[in-house]
Image 1 (cartoon, rainbow, N blue to C red):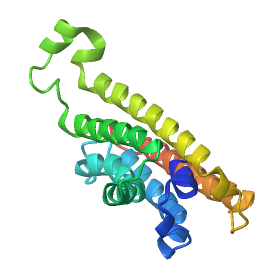
Image 2 (cartoon, helix red, strand yellow):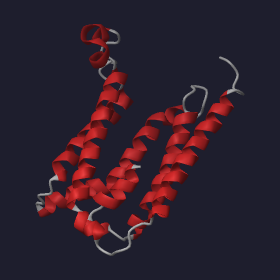
Image 3 (cartoon, rainbow, N blue to C red):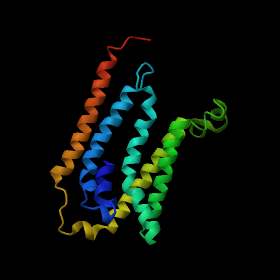
Image 4 (cartoon, rainbow, N blue to C red):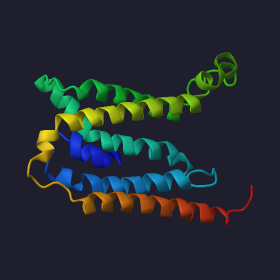
Length: 196
């Protein structure tokens, strides 16, 4: 879903209608299938894919962010004053924080069990902090997309070549259907795994 919004509203003007822009959403669909597959099949320690669990969560964020990071670079070089840039910075900070907490298991790793008792459910357990950062990151991402959409309304209404509803829903539908198929296959294969 975020690849569709990034492709429509956040791509830098220099990249619009480029080969990368045309391949961005199909590559994002492929990326989501690979990420969902790795996430599902790396759940068990017996799987040879167990060590690929962290990259499965980080790779989509890295891929989706390429256009955003290039936009940050252009903004720094050209001293832009777009209203969405500070909100994108907030989203990026929370996205990196989410990935960092997911991979490092901080703050829980510093003192297992003690921080939980000291600060309660939210502040002491890394998984809860991970979810809080993820929710805040998603909130700022949606805010930034809304601001970008409002700023680029004139450009979006110009008679270029907007994607048809079939293209948009087709990409999203293929991504969702394929991810659900991967999850279904993973769930079905769990029945055939021996009990530990």
